[in-house]
Image 1 (cartoon, rainbow, N blue to C red):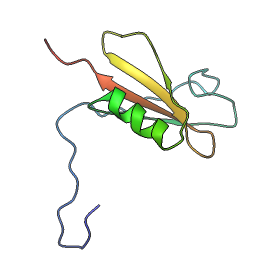
Image 2: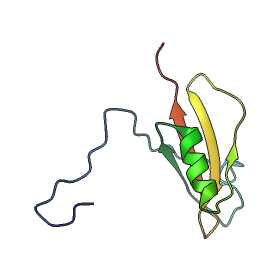
Image 3: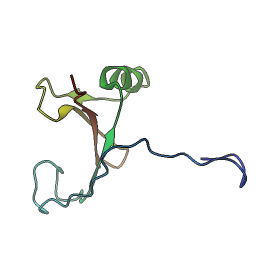
Image 4: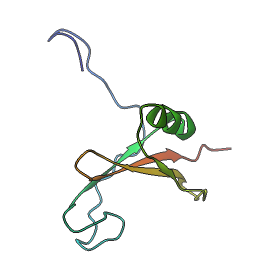
Length: 91
């Protein structure tokens, strides 16, 4: 966020932005009282997980490496899901 109206705004580097609805009873979203989840693309999932854990957050890292990348999950203070995604880098 810019510090003034004249400041430069943050711009997303080129990459995927996806809005994907899930069924209301999706296990991925969690308990029924939580109706949404956000997925954030990160450059270094291990560094981000370390920072969050150092700040006292509980983060679960999925040990599997998927064709589209690596994932980790945590919850916001209200219990809504937050998923971190590090896309696979082309080799």
